[in-house]
Length: 264
Image 1 (cartoon, rainbow, N blue to C red):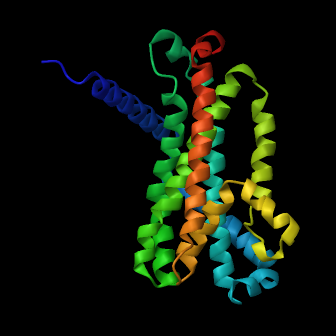
Image 2: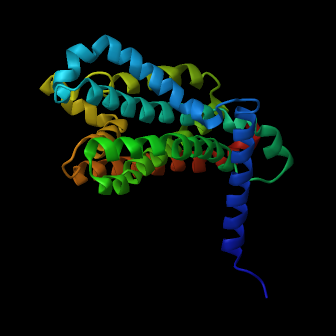
């Protein structure tokens, strides 16, 4: 009796992504003391810096609480750092895996996916527990913890879509990293991380929705820092934008997939 071919292909694909993800994690943290928990260090340090500089100015927008301002900054940094790291590491993934692609018949998608998966493992194991603790202590509603995975999944899906897009472009245009560095900086600047949404002029505020990270970060903040029920419409927008970006990224990736072997 033969097995289900689609299931066999799907299982093999999963196993390949799993193997590459483990390899990425081992290489990244070989000899490291803190391991995946280094992903917490950067947002903690940056939160301390921003709080020291801006807390006295902006805490009044966060119920007059310096702690709430610091936590809002931390949540924003966590999301932006994840997106930036996952997509930047995925950008050269196809070219880096060129030797394997030319020697073994492998699905090209496993290379950018494994990079996002490695970063997602760090997020889920290193940062999600911290967000859960913040949610319970600040929102005082343990049921909000159940909502945390929704914007986090949207963040991972969004990053995967961008990873497909930039990794496929890098195969043909090797100067993409310099341009993408500017793009990630603009994305970071145009989402309220260290400054509150309230200070953004009304005419400009509408443009915040162009940044797909904005509804994700605001959803995370509502879940973690507010006692009231989070805005489900906001989470729906975050999920919709993430799925659209994933679809567009995959379309670009799939359209160029047969050309990869000639350039890597």
